[in-house]
Amino acid sequence: MVLRRIRLALVVLSLVVLQTTVFTHLRVLDAVPDLCLVGTIAMAYEEGPIPGALFGFASGLATDLFLSTPVGLSALAFALTGYGVGLFQSGLIRESKGIALFLGGVGSLVGNLIFLIVGGLAGHEELFALHNIQVLIVASLYDALMAAAVFPFVRWAAKADSGQAWPPL
Amino acid sequence: MVVYRRDTRGRSTLLIIIVLSLVLITVDANGNSVVNSVRSTAHNVIAPVQSVVNSAFQPVRNIAGGITHYSAVKSENARLQRQIADLRGQLRVDKGTGGEVTQLEKLLDLPTTEDATGIVAEVTGGAPGNFQRTVTLNKGTSQGVKVNYPVVTGDGLVGTVTQVFGSSSTVTLIDSPTLGVGVRLEVSGATAITEARAGDRDLSLGFLSDMNAVATKGELVFTSAVTNAAFPAGLPVGTVASYSKGAQDLQPTITVTPVVNLDNLDYVKVLRYPDPTAAPNGG
Image 1: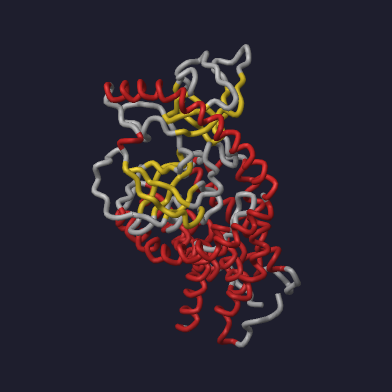
Image 2 (image 1 turned 135 degrees about the horizontal axis):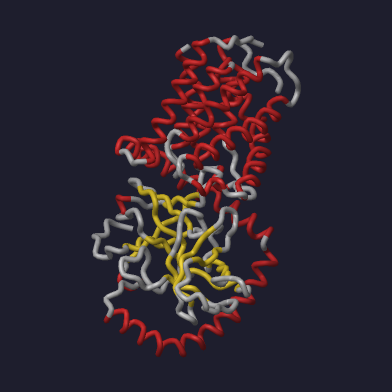
């Protein structure tokens, strides 16, 4: 249990470091991937709504420290997304191929939309700009691609002890 | 696959997370020293990694830039050669009027670029999020950088420092919707405030002092000379990209293209302004 928590903390740390260093140089059409959001979606898919929400809150807080928007905004958006994805996956009858890409894309769209709406209501009116719809779409496609790498990483951290660490995507 | 029931414990956990997030948003929006110190620590930890990654990515960026922008670079080079020749001539003409303006600014006790000393900084990355127009610099409070210091390149204004940490700082770019710059049109002398829209690299001018001001394409736009201004007077901000005024319009629509390529910044200078006497600690 302790080892699992350490692994999950390391996952959050690595995703934040990658997000704030490497991916600031890999902007495509004004969009960068939200690695911690994709990690949250992966966690929610693997473990359900509450672990997803908790992972989203923790990784969102870590992300917030590097943004100019208020601390707590990504934490809220990621936690709600994690909870929602967790509820959705509990209704799935069987796993299907490509589910990671699908959830990565749709979850990212929802998470970023929550970020924009709550941020805009919190006083950052610039977030309501029309251009951000384009950014949302590009970012969700980017996140869908990133899901292919992030899902196995999170699965390893969450399930390494149970011997189910690397099932196919 | 595990089946989860929508139990009350789960809902109360989610409720706690929501309340906690909203409290944090409220607390941070009003400024909180604890949140700021945690943020500062996180930035100080990540700053050396950002520098290393930035250095590692430089050759990749150069190669990618060379491949994708070769023809553009070639034509830009030819255009710049012509511009240098034109500017040499223009400089000779401006020397006379420039001297007069400097004398007038001194008489009015208006701060100028010459009053500010600078800290050279490397741009180590862009914004980590999707909805900000910022860059990160490798200089912070330990090198004398402060919030609200203007940031420039040799070409002109880049933005202003909005967050500062021990060894890094965040600069909000002039094409960010959150930043407005007081400017003056080169020919008419009319003053205005720049307004940026998300996703649009050009700026539009609002609050024009002269509703009948006319601007021509290519005309330079400088920071305006105002007492207690956020920027020193006379910094080039952009060139007029378009001008239009309909019969029913109260004021003309003027768009300005920034003189600095804000998507490709390597080194910048942070101006110690408005307190140029601040003791430099390095840089």
